Amino acid sequence: MLVDLQDNSADGSTQMDLDLDSEELAAIPVSSDHDESLPLLPPLPPIPPQLTQSGRPQRNYRLPKRFQDNLPRPEAPLPAVETEPPNSETATHTGIRRVTLIVRDHLVTALNAFGLWRDYPERPTFDPDSSLTLEDLATPRDKSHPSTPLISNDSAFSVSVAGARPAYWPFPNPTIHGVLKWLNNGKTVKSEAEMTHFVHDVILSPEFKATDLIGFDAHRENQRLDAALSKDALRGQFNESVVEILVPSGDTSTPPCLFSVPGLLHRKLTSVIQEAFTGSLSHLFHFSPFKLFHKSPITGEDERVYGEIYTSDAFLNETEKVHRHGQLPPDDPGCVREKVVAAVMFASDATQLTQFGDTKAWPIYFMPGNLSKYVRAKPDSGGLIHLAYIPVVSI
Amino acid sequence: MDSHQLPDLFQQFASGFHHKWKTQKRQILTHCRRELMHAVWSKILDDDFIHAYTYGMVIKGVDGIERRVYPRLFTYSADYPEK
Image (cartoon, rainbow over all chains, first blue to last red; front, side, top):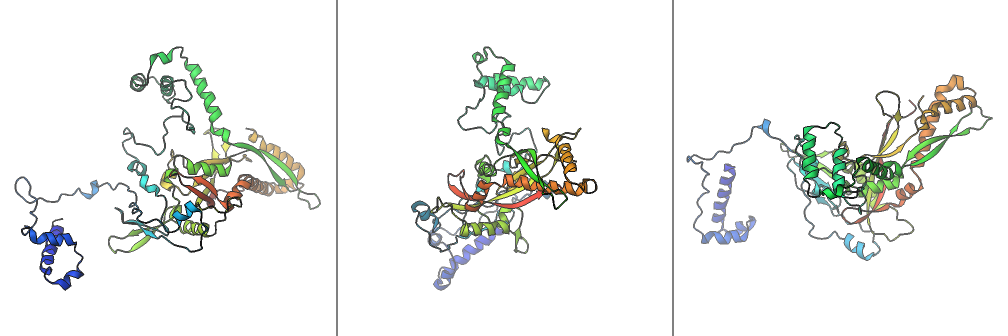
């Protein structure tokens, strides 16, 4: 630090000398008002070294390396938009037919704390990382300190909450909601801690009204919850289908026969994609692919960093293809919306449902590759969506 | 779910239908499971998805901007049921 300061003051003095040499001055990028102010002021004393209370020079103390905690950080923010990208704005609003002139708005971001930088072939219209907080990137070790989760997993009560519902749905008032929430919080033992929670979170809550509880019956309220959940539950989004397979006869003279396998539960893939792209994690979705690079602090060389779907060459190429050749539907041939790629990832694996017995499920999962794997793979993030359950044909 | 009875039902049917069931049981079952997997995927990748795949689907993002989203399959990780 001290060395830096001396360097700066040395620079300052050379600038003053050069002030007289006009031709050399032009070569040095110095801000002009700085120059003008210099002759008016008395010569600046060198910046005094910072002293401690006892008059000794301040030393730079550094935390030993083993105590340094490199917290994850998002990448450097995108520079603010100075000029609108050439063709997008006018095109979106007026719907002028596009000329096949490809204008690229290539964008490179600054280095972040870890030397990572991004190279966008085209300026993104949306930067999901700008909304990332430290809590999104790291799991606090201290679990008692509540972090703001990516999605509100407030309770088992909030199942795909539709906008118009009150917060205490499906109960008639917030008081009963509070009581039932405590009752169904998963703790089955009446402990002192639980009682304290009950008093502080429920009874002392500003929403608590004793009159709301007149005629209260826990059984009835639980039934109300069950009824609401079963109506609203995930199961309702699945359709049950019969799949038909051709069974060969083993004989060329006998044609194969259709066999119907019942019990395929599946959701509509398009609605699942729609849901993922508008759901509670959609603010973290990447639409614009980029190449991620790491600048080595030692050699200064840039090295490509692979890790996410949306930084992969496959995604970059596909986005390029969709931008250029993505077909427009016949019913909306003049559509000028931005074309983006939804990176669909499927996975499937038979799962043992019980520890004893052989109840099996065979789900097909859907995962959006536009979402960072660090979010998607968190068990409670909701980034992995069940798409179908294949009928189990186990032998 | 009735899927537990399924193997019995299917094997009953197939053993009567395929005249080489006794010697080729394993191969026939493998084949049929492969058929099942393809049948399931033909249900999932329905006409609406193919339409979305070709022409994109308009989705309004959290930033209020509508985008035309073209679904593209990037990975498929599964153990093949025939094993």
